[in-house]
Length: 518
Image (cartoon, rainbow, N blue to C red; front, side):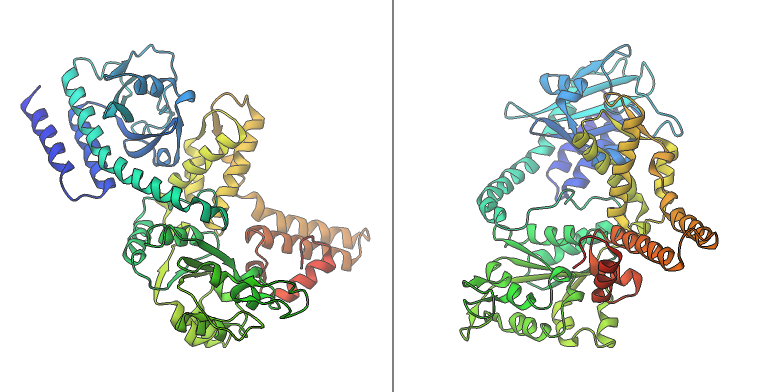
């Protein structure tokens, strides 16, 4: 082993004792690997259950960070995990490589790997992960020192040790809180705050800063950016993580029941109140209450909520007995609450009480480098759900995703990719690798539908095939359904898109025969 290699190994060992966050430690490790092994790509993966999860990558598509690699589906990774020494696969190996088509060193092509090796990461006799290196050349790893690889594997395993211990502690806390979470709203799919952009890193930093306090947090951002995910991240990082996180969608609460939902009621308080019932604030005692769409909260209820937040006291509807509650409040909205206050639609005192620590989640169009990571995560999720083979974006499809405007943000990206996987699956054998093409994404179709249908309706009216009233109603029906789809079924958000009051939208939807209108 050469002197520079020894120096690199020593530097890795020194990094293990430094106060580095996990991401930095992993990235420095991969940079060291690249300096010692002539490869085009490396990856550090942790073993979680029966699959490997990427922790850091170098030279691979960012989408890899959103993927999961079940060992049963990836024989090369399974062979590495079963071995007690580094494994090198011959160039003629017929075992599929998990990173084919994902190496950045071959822009504009599928970038198939020709030389591959991996080191199992072992701690206390158990495999905890894998370190992989890939090259596009067939002889890149000829003459490598086997002891060098063993040393790298040992140090990489040590790098995971601290994280593994922390995860063990978190697992114990998760087990203690499992019963509580079963009684509250479950964690939605895709609840990780994924991304590598400066914008999303700033959100993570803000969450880390405020999480350990009891300050009220107001999460701001457009529809679909992931405000609920950010709220759950605040709770999960707080001292209240083992207590319940109670979710309330203020936009879904009719004005007649919102006070009862928040504060509870006693038997006989109103027609239908046949038993005492605790409200969400009472259920969230010692935990966190997440008030989503807080901008939709009726004005008549806002002063009661303000008193509860200021005094820590609530009264059930129909009761004169005050109750003390210890609740941390996280609120979220896609409205400009300062403008709502100026317009008289939101109380200024409640706004200032909620906006103690505002956190803004940027729209996807302002963090385009996150699109590949999110796409990798969504595609991998639908691959598992639909039972298909590997799903990869062609370079042209990846460019189309990056260039799209994404008015619906990450939620819209999720839906677009779900449809794309279905289209690609119908085009080929689902056991094969599915390649998502630009046509599968259909990014321009939705925007083109409305004017095309409007022109067709106009022609039908002119030809006497349809009355003007019928044509206008059908166009209204199309617009309302599109607004609801873009708002993920949220009627309040759809009403804002259409510039209507929510109640008027419900009446219009009922007249047009749109189901689920209330």
